[in-house]
Picture 1 (cartoon, helix red, strand yellow):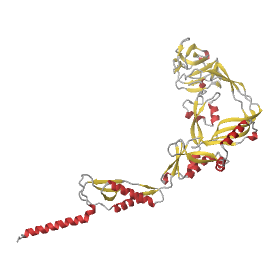
Picture 2 (spheres, one colour):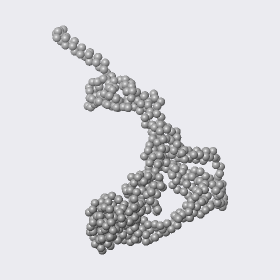
Picture 3 (cartoon, rainbow, N blue to C red):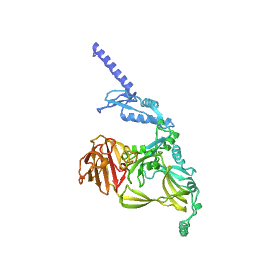
Picture 4 (cartoon, rainbow, N blue to C red):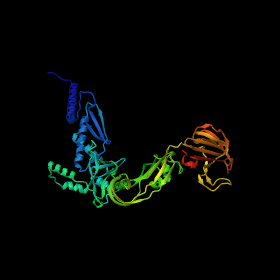
Length: 524
């Protein structure tokens, strides 16, 4: 019989206790025990919007839980939801760890989603007109906005705006189509029974009918065509409430006039003050917008482009109207070219006289501005007499200001004599400046006089191509001689106070064909 010692019995009892403890632990934690033989992260704790959710066995499980929770929240709401989420996953490698129950994790994620979900309105629409855009809450509001821009000119309510797919775009983009209500109604109610042969025969008979000139009362008057000037794009979107613009505000933004820059091309007979009258734009605004226009005396040339501003809304309407007119009319200006004159010279050979007529005209407008006019039929009651203008064809030489700085003290033309012996018909212009200031040639040419000039004091005369002459008077010193050739900008004299003069200044003349002209109209 084997006998066990007292210590052996104690060891046996301890061993049994340890094994029972391990067995109980395995039973208690069996669902969450991890014993992955493959090295790497196998235990993942994740946080949502800085709130700890719990532990999962893989990232894939976490993403599945997130998707299920999102479906739960969205399914409970009748509106489109925006859910703000910030997911953080921390992975680690462990041998033993408790994995949370998937249902508990799902409920926790859904709770965070619920707290951070923001309901939106119904799908919105973004309307783009060139660089302008606005967000509206429905397609009805989009149509109301576009119709508001149209209604200002469609006074008889004959047209309406519809949204159609833009055939030029690959993506789902809508555009505005303006339809005549009566034509749309006819298309919806008409039923066509004509066969191809019947239609062919009808077309033959129509082509055989002789053209008859319509009487004034036979024409159809009113709007013939109307459309938006700008491209209109409408795109569906999902937006938060604060991104939407109330319809009334959007209508005001789209239909209110704002200043838009346009280009005006100078035509024969134009002057700066005439352009002011044509465009209704103040002269100081034209000077501000155009670097080439320094002041009211700046010279402008035919074909020169000037920037002007016109009032226009964000969305402009172009329409063509057929109108009956009883009006005075002017015959087109007739020009007679003179190859011996400069393009800056012209003379009226015949004054115009306005005629009177009855007419049918197609007039195209951009908003309220007339941009073209076509007379379809007219009956002249009194013939108009055209204006006939003789104009030069030669390009004049360029002229620069012969001094730097100076103050304009006397203009060209009639004036009160500043001192005894001075002319009351001023043939040039005067700039006041200190004696000894540099005087340069306004243009290249040949010196024809250099020296004393009587009441002009010391002078320099320069002959330029085409019978043009410049004169510089009241000089203190002459630096060129008769017969010498000078270039534009070359120093020719020093200003002074010689001859009949009231103070130090330069008298400058510009003569064409022997006749003095206003130098300010030609200086660059």
